[in-house]
Length: 272
Image 1 (cartoon, rainbow, N blue to C red):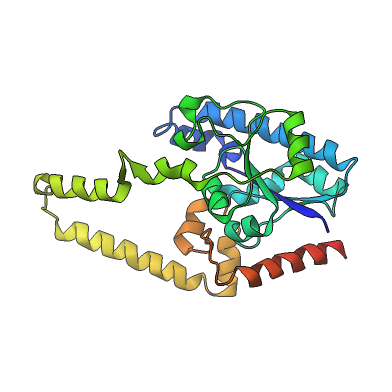
Image 2: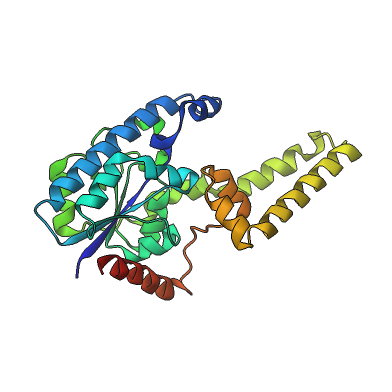
């Protein structure tokens, strides 16, 4: 039985120049993040290739980020790895991220909030940061994070031991602000500022929103038809996926056993 190692990819390395230009309006550090993400991905794939050249005890699952998932088909390094190690390195889009987390022995990522789900599922999660990400650009709950892969020695240790889960309390600040649940603070802010909000809404504005909502409902309905669904799935913009609600990364214990069996079937079919 081979252990499954899940790599949770992010979208930084896939963003095109025009998309980075748009993202720069809300994130002035997007170029730095993109550059560091590309370096880490290159180093991760190099370590995987070196490991698989002498070891056959792992199956690496590369899970693309849903925002630009289909663009990974253009990644030559991924193509080379899947051809060189067809039974031990797989790029798989099927099923939700939550399912893969529960089916894996350990998970790695350069930059992903999935560490929270992994901690709740008691699955070891490690940040792959051979090229460091400055604290000022990182999520606050990943600063001084204990599970970190900084070099080849760390990677080899993780492959040998399987690592260990992190305590969910490390992510408490993701849910709480100033010792209060974040949603309580938001509600308080809304109630405080409610009287200051301009309540004037024109009929034209309401009609525009209604038409927009009807259009979205129509697209979701069309997406249930095989012809339209196959077309929408070829779109490389993650906004289509979110609009059509064709994926769900939430953990669902009620169906996870059946989904894990489906995942194992996928792997077994790839072996034959």
